[in-house]
Each structure stands twice: as structure tokens, then as C-alpha cells.
Length: 604
Ligand code: ASP
Picture 1 (cartoon, rainbow, N blue to C red):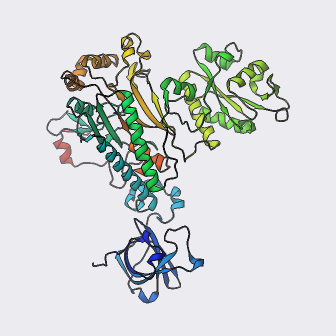
Picture 2 (cartoon, rainbow, N blue to C red):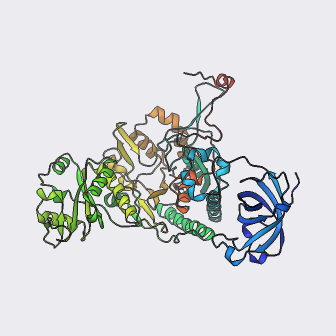
Picture 3 (cartoon, helix red, strand yellow):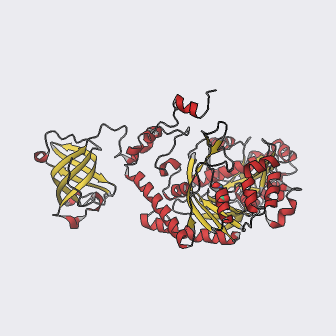
């Protein structure tokens, strides 16, 4: 089918194009029939413009329905003042069509593309099944464009800094990042398997041994974990590694790169974000103490605070039992929370129970008018709390002081083992931040969390496991405690956090085979397994391995933040749905009997 090539793109038409005869190609975004005259919004990737088609120019057999692919010729005219559409960049003009052609008709769509506001109601499975249609929506195209621009800018920055882009294998051997591997059977010999990389970690370290010195890759990583709104079985990292560096040099480079790239993207797309400026630092211990997590959202304050010492000699059974069994009593301040009804406070308690709390105690602070029945505290505030049966006004005052509480606050108190208490209060603090609109979407609050513990004890496995991965270097000063007190050993490991999400993680690596072996031993990896799984790395380290370190910023997470979405699928062209499936391609799928036989596999 022949058609007139376009002379303009739809989204560029403005009043200065008036009177021009132009050719457009695109899709029929909206088709309205007003007494025979067709009003058609034609859309291409640049935007859309309204066309007016008189019945006289409409061919008798024209099958022009929404999302048909079309070509049109017409004249640009100015719209009359009352018909201008200020919401549309092309809203001051329209195109009076002289010729219209359907290049490819469209069936009725499974969901409307022109109705962005109601996309939230469309079943997501359906959107992914018809992804090629979903991606026609301007919002989705823009997400892809933001992503492409971000990746391009990262490449430009790193190329400029002397980094070499190197591709590493996808079909390879297991490289642990703490998740389950995706496995691929080896056809030549039954019983042997490849694994898809959870990250290119070992390869990038081997590239340092190879003398590459500065490496990066826009790397796909594969982790067989249950997918969640913020996780996909395959995702993309900007994987980086450098030789002869210390932690400071890596952090400084990543800060400069982030500023350059993110601020460039904000400007290019006119994103409603303030430019990135500071990168404050916090130790892991400080983050856990003040925010109950290792990825605090620091767009707002409200740090958690400890009151175990203030309530230590209580008769209140919940606190008493918790403290006696080694637990803690900690709390967070909810400004204006004292106004909540008992029912609302009950709902908040239910929220905490959803994250494992056994219950939540609270102290509402106000005035005598607010709480005529309340307990008058020495400092002038009046408290309403069920704790008043167990605590004196002075003790309540001490708690209020610890909180730096003001009239109107609700102090939310959790008593449990440290990890549960922290986890509950971490989530409660974010909930309070959301309720009080303190998590300003315009802000990009970056933060380094440093000095992570090297290992953590896993009760389930009965052994130590790496906080990051087994290649992370312990701090030199802590090396002596590796065997005697592993919990005390800190690592040269750092995470970059933005708005409460981990957006990059990295470390200085071990480059000495003896230290690497001590770590494997600590992790309960016996010598035979060390040799089998990591022999190549240990051997490589014996050939003059340079000191090295790196980091891997997550691309998907960054694009989610920039495009204001909580759903990772919105920033990936062809994502998997909940169960790790691709309903569009029909993957995973069965294989032919011949393929089973070739692989030497039998159904269980
Ligand atoms: N390989 C690590 C990860 O995937 C990142 C790094 O340590 O560079 O999280």
C-alpha cells in the first residue's frame, strides 16, 4: 500500500504552521462522529493533534475506528478562540483533512488507550498481555523515553570518565547475590547446568584482575524470587567496577554521576523534581537506630526513639516481659495524631499488627480542653493513655521529653524484639509520613548508608550469611574478629538510598585469596565447594589482583522514582506479571518431546 510520507509529526503543530498543507501518519487516538463530520485525534509518538474530516472526503469503504493506523493530508488552521484546548500542546490548531487513508484497520481494543485517567481500573494482566497496545499510550512511551535517556546519560558520563563498557556472559555459572538461580540445562551432558547471573559480580572482579581498571555494563540480572510490585525476575543494573580505589573515590564518582545524569533527565523531560544536590551519609547503625531500617526516607524527620531505659522497672506486663526476654521498647512521634479517635488509633494498631507487632501502646498529648480526664504532666501537657495505670506523670513526662513531644502529638509505642520493633516502627513512620504528606514527590532525598555489618546470623539456616555478597571486604580494623566475633565485623560496603528505596549497592572487594577463603569458611562453605564454585576466583586472586571495588545502581528503581510510580512494571517495556509469567508471549511454556529427549530430561 502506498502512502504519503509524513511532512510533520503530530505533536509539533503550532499556530505558525497555519495555512500549511501537511502530511501526517499515526494512529486514530479518538474518533468522534458529529453528524457525519469526523473529529479524529491523530497520534504519533510526538503527541496528537485534532483533525476534522468532512463527509465529502471520506471514502465509502473507510474502516476508521480507534487505533487504526492512518495517513492523512490536510491544511493546518487556527482554531477559533472558544474552541482552543489549552490542555493540549497542539490545542490552538486543527487540521482540515483533504485525504484520509487507513493503512491498517484495528479491531475493537481490549481496553481504551485514550482514557489515561482510568487506566488504573484496567486489569494489569490484560495490559501486559496486550503490551504492544499499552505501550502506545503516551505515558508509557514517556517512561520508555525517560529510561532511554537515563541510560544514554550514564553511558556518556562513564565513557567520559574512562570506563570501558564490557559485556559479560548470560549463560554462565551461579554467582550468588542471595537469591535463587535461574538454571538452563546443558544439552551435551545430562546433569550439568548453566545458571543465569544474579549479577555480573564475579566477571567484573575478574575484569579488574585482567587490568581493565574501569568497567561498566548496563547489565541484566536474573533472580528467581517471587515477583512483587517492586521486583522482577530480570532487572537492569548499571554495573560498575574500579581498580586502585577506596570507598571515598567510588562514592564521590557516583555522587557526581547521579547529579549529572538525574539533573539532566529532570531538565530534559521537565519532571516535577527538585535537582539533586546533597548526599548525606549515615552509618548502618545510625540508620537502624533512628529509622529502624537500612534505607530511610529522609524527606522528613520523625526519628524513632528508645524508651526501654525509661520503662525498665515497670509492672506493665507487656513491657516487662519484653524487656526480660531481651526485647526493647521504642516509639515514634505522630504529629497531630492526638486528634485521632479511639477507633482510628485502633486501626493504626491493626496496621502495626499487619507487620508483626503484638500490639501498640500510645500516649496522646494535648491540653486540659483536649483531654479533661487526662493526666496532667509536670511540663504542662496533658496525656491521654492507657499506660497511666502503670506510669507516673513524671515517667510520662520523661517519655514525652525523649520524644521532644508537643501538644497534638500521639506517641506510638512498640515493645518487642529489636528486629520486629524496628521493622514495625519503620513502616509506621512511613505511614505517618504518607498521612501527613511529608513524603514530598518533588524531592529526591539521596543518602549513603555506610559501614554495613559484613554478615548476619540466619536462624533459618543456622549459619552466618553475607549482608551483601561473599566478595565484600571486611574493614581492615575488624579483620581480627572474623572468626571470634563475626557480628562485630563491619564491611567496606555502602548503599545509596533515595526516598526510602535502595537505588545502588556496592563495596570494596576482597582481593586476597586467604581473606576470601576465611570469608567462605565463615559462611559455612566447605573447602570442596569453595574449590568447585569459586576456585577460578581464588586462583585469579593469586595472580596479582589489584585492590578494587564497585557498585551497581539499579536502573529500574531510579526510573520508578523519576516517573513517580510504585510499580516496576510501568518502567519495563515487557515485564513479567505476578507469577513471573509473560502472558503476551505465553512464557513460560511447554517444550517439545524432542527437546525433553535432547536434554536428557524426564518429567518427574
Ligand atoms: N553485585 C552487587 C549487586 O548486584 C552490586 C555490587 O556489589 O557492585 O547488588
